[in-house]
Figure 1 (cartoon, rainbow, N blue to C red):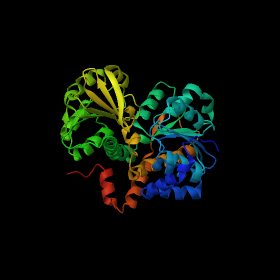
Figure 2 (cartoon, rainbow, N blue to C red):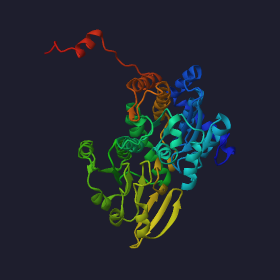
Figure 3 (cartoon, one colour):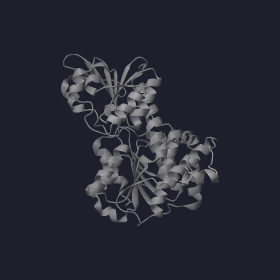
Figure 4 (cartoon, helix red, strand yellow):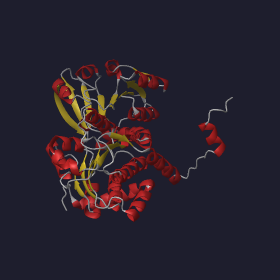
Length: 418
């Protein structure tokens, strides 16, 4: 079996972490039982580019229980949990190519290795596999049934490819499922981003000016959690409706230019590039902390920060001190990469339970629909989205009402009014 992980000696620790996460992923567990009996993915080869965490490890187990042959690469150089990568290789017969802290050359070599077994399905977290196939492995396209995408950033890239008619095969935007973005993006990103910042810095958030760039579902979640910790939250947006929503949610809204002067902590969550740039660094107060919660490390203009600095040094794990020419210091967390997965462990298993349930069911859906889908970005089928919600509620012991026949008739009709 082909693999490239840090050390197989770490496997036992990783196995225990996966078992702990599985305890809080009952929906995925029930899908695993179903897949084990029905084998909906028999002989299907899957190439995955995902954050290699204990939750992802349990998703890989489900796919393999369904009969799939899985090759897994990391979707971010700093997000890999080396013990989980080792456990997947040693105990679960998965080919894994991921090492925490790998350089760019290794990262892209691992992507190539993940594609080496000529996949039928791709699973992306940022669209790197799809773009790699489009740019240099078009020989694989004819055998690919379809793919899934887990992130907002990746969906944006893939929709752009579809618009320009270069999307090589059908993709299901798992990120856009209600049982994904309403919970994973909001509650998962909110909690794990704050967790990453606190693990990296050990600062007290109470009383601090906490600036968030972007008020999508991730930004909303971060704002909610930072406010709950006592921070004074400031939101910066380009979308007038989202800015208005942030105001109505009780947060102060201003331009980044103005926020740069008063912020203590800055977090980007936009999916765009150079959000925090040279002009902002020049205005920041001494000791400002900057972090990113978007998928790629382009939201903070690190080259400009380095250009403005006379020196830099590592203060703590995941904390770099940049000293500007005027003596002011700016602290960059986790090299500008995803702070929640670089300095912490990513989203809690309880919320990833729904996201990865969507992933597993959407892969089975793609196999079932083989040859019948166009080269476009599809939403998660509503029946899958609702099924995941019902399953999650059941595991939580929560019951919901059902409409009576009379109520259904009333909602469907037009004759009965006031």
